[in-house]
Length: 162
Figure (spheres, helix red, strand yellow):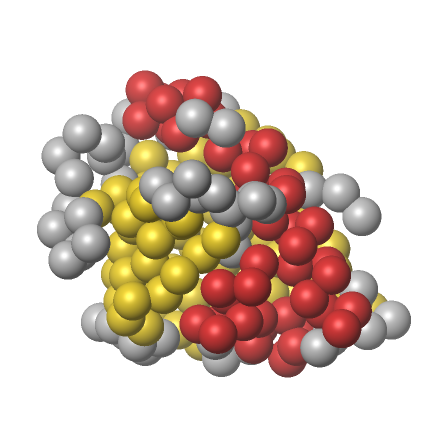
C-alpha cells in the first residue's frame, strides 16, 4: 500500500490518501491515542514525544519530533471537531515547547477522514489546507511528503503488531 498525494487546483491544499490493512476502529485508535501516536508519528530515526494530549473539540496535542542527535521540533494540533471512527478536524502549527505558536510559518488545517474500505481495511484521507500556496510549498520543501509516507509505513507496522 502506498501513500498518494494530490494537489488541489487552487494550489492551497494537498489531499493525502492511504489504505491500511486494519479495521476503522483500530486505525482510528492509532490516530487518536497519544501512546500509539508516539510510536509511529515520526519518520525513523526520529521519534514523537507527547507533552500534552486532549483529543476532543477544543483540546490539543502538543508534541515534539525528536531527532537522533537530541534535536527537537515542536508542533501543536488544536482539535476543532471529532466524529468518532469517522473524522476529525483541527489546525497544525509549529510552536515552542510551551505551545506558543511560531510566526515563522503559517498553519495548516487538517480534515482527516476514516472510511471502511472493505475486507477489514481502512482508507484514510487527509486534506491539508493552507492560507497560501507559498505556505503549502514551504511544508512540501521541508520533506512533508517523504516524511508522512515514512510515518504511514511505521503505522502499517504498528497495526500489524497491535
